[in-house]
Image 1 (cartoon, rainbow, N blue to C red):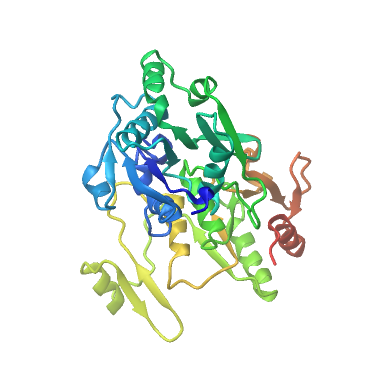
Image 2 (cartoon, helix red, strand yellow):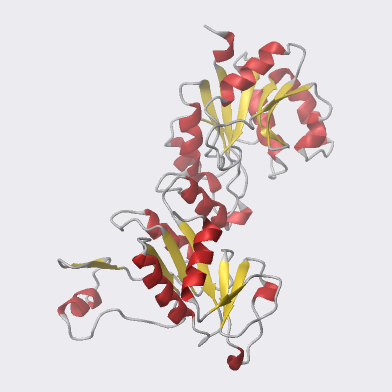
Length: 377
């Protein structure tokens, strides 16, 4: 067998707390109806063996994947270094000289990752570590580690070392650059650390279109602008989906109608269909309403029609690109001065700001601005 295709053991590190994901187990968070960790398993399946999972909670859920479970040998969620230590200890117990470590939240790993790291290891026989690198950044959790360094690593952690870069600085290291990946619109080692990252991942995977919001105070004209934009986009063949936020209880069905009575009787979800359209109504039984990112997930699912762009009306505090709709008559302050996600301001009167001004009386120019901004074709 070509030495570049040498099979090495692999540990997927999923022992962190996922604080920026609301404390949820990041590896089990769904990306298009699949747990995030399944994307990593898919990337290494058939290219690395055996495979183990470094986790510290939800053991029963992870056992369903069918791989050996490795707990942190030092407790307290001290650092990703502890997960790497678990990996080195495990591989060394199998009499393996090297082990590949991967984080659980990198679904875009390059296809040639393992063979490239192994090739570098074989061409540099006097090294302890091979680290993946892209766009000028090192990714030490995506690396081949010599297992003989497990005792050195344990001692470093016990002495208070927490940052991977500090520990790796004492090792003989080789680096492999992954900057020449064809058709790559995203760094292949991008970590998904937040709901917004999950949203971007769905767009990269082609399951969600371009998204931008219309933000403004009540009565600023958001709905009027949204309606006109939809009509303009439709005339040039661009399909628009809309997500509108409501601060109040609402019904989309009339009291006394059969559909209203069926839904109120407790059907969840309730689906009504006709030749012209269908609708799905789901009661929200949570104490809190669904987040913007949870609602946008709906647009990635069948049987919704594919759209080219999603306009979000409301959700003015969310971290998505937005146009501010402003009317001075309302007497409210600007939003864009405190919100870096606002990329333009639309008003009936000329406003001198550092961001582009859009004339609310010229919908065609606003439409073209959006097309140019997001490169809609």
